Length: 220
Ligand SMILES: O=C(O)COP(=O)(O)O
Ligand SMILES: [Mg+2]
Image (cartoon, rainbow, N blue to C red; front, top):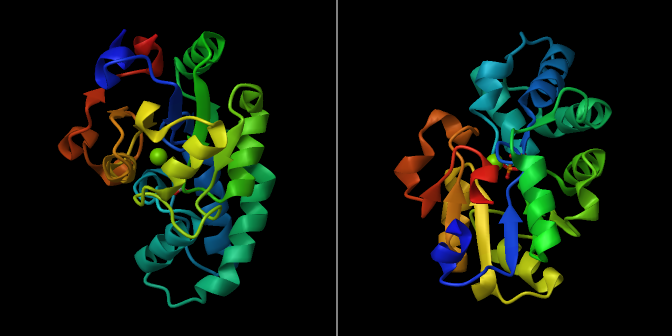
């Protein structure tokens, strides 16, 4: 099995990025961004642009949207508008990528411990994980605001292992962006990447993950 080859033995834990790895959240993120831009009397950005702005949390997403609109609107004042809009729509058009559901259930049945380590604010990550019923297989969810550090720092990955009760050296990271690859490297973990995610419009292979799979169920 590919997973065993990467670590030299069966991993005890798998840590998953959320946006662009488990779920395509861009339709709902773009809708909340556009709602916020409208609130500031700015033109909509649309899904294609928003896709390239996801990966560093909600604040950075909105900052990139305002920069694109060449607006000097108050980011702190608009952030609550974005949060309220996203809270209402975050599980509306968001879908799981092909192969994700089968793979998660398979690993859970195998007894591998699963966690989500995202830069998305924790409350939205939790809501989405529950929406897909993954809280039953994924007991740990860390968001970009759960700790003082976020990816590409290694701390959230270490914290997830700690909460799962698994040694860091027995875990693997799975993600779609350079943040995930860098966080895993810094954490001393092998990293598997999916090419269908966001990664700021660049090919994730350039970040040199240990393995790239087209869908997660290729790993089972
Ligand atoms: O930037 C975000 O909000 C989500 O990022 P993620 O890819 O770490 O889940
Ligand atoms: Mg991602």
